[in-house]
Amino acid sequence: MANNEESRGLKSLFDWFANRRKSGGTNIERQEREIADGLWHKCPKCGVLSYTKDLRANQMVCVDCGHHNRVDSDERIRQLIDANTWKPLDEHLRPTDPLQFRDRKPYSDRLRETQEKLGLVDAVKTGLGQINTLPIGLGVMDFRFMGGSMGSVVGEKLTRMIEQATQRRYPVVIICTSGGARMQEGMLSLMQMAKISAALQRHRDSKLLYIPVLTNPTTGGVTASFAMLGDIIIAEPKATIGFAGRRVIEQTLREKLPEDFQTAEDLLKHGFVDDIVSRTQLKSTLTKLIALHQPPLETTPNMVLWESMKLSSTAAE
Image (cartoon, rainbow, N blue to C red; front, side, top):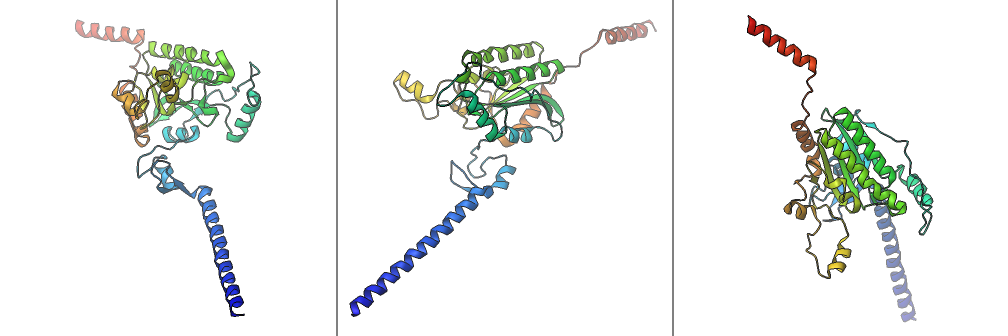
């Protein structure tokens, strides 16, 4: 009899601990939900928890290890462009499906779903604005939209922005982040490399400044074209920059690549980029570079004639 009571007591004790674990698990789940709501951010590099508001104030750069978290195109524009000076260009341009491409789902459905999910038309935003009162043409790629892939609309918007900047004699800055050309558009995507490069050449012929900023990751056809055509090429710390992927190169060469291969630091060492700039210093760095490379004021023939007349009259006196 005593043994039965004892076993019942032990069983109820186990039940009590089990219930405590269940209630504890609920509290943990509740805490995880609270963290997931966006109040806190866990750094994927060092694991430190940061208050999201403080992280945003530091431009999404981890204050503990300096890891540059990926930011979207809207956030980039807010970080770089002076308030109330941003004028978007060509927002009406929308991608189509000229090849009727289909993989696991039709390309047209993939486009529509991505647009509805992100509220973006395509993988780039372009416009004119001011950076510390200096006018610029700016293109910002967004990796969230199909890996920042370069389709026809991306190429057309960047080309039009560059042409507008050339006409107005503005410097051009492009924030690059991309997985490369958009395979769903085939050759039409590859044509954008030449089109943007031609617009940049006309920009250079006008003696105007172009600065690409290479962020994580910048690969494929973007690296093979406008990302590497800058007068001054800037990269963010630890950004992955290359053409083919690391695994593809290792399989082709049949050898192990160095750990820092295709990083911004490795490219700086080999002369492919000119400087590595932290995101917190990017706006001030761009301001200094643009101010140093302001185009000279054009002298009109009438002004030259007037100056020569003044010199002649002074000499006669």
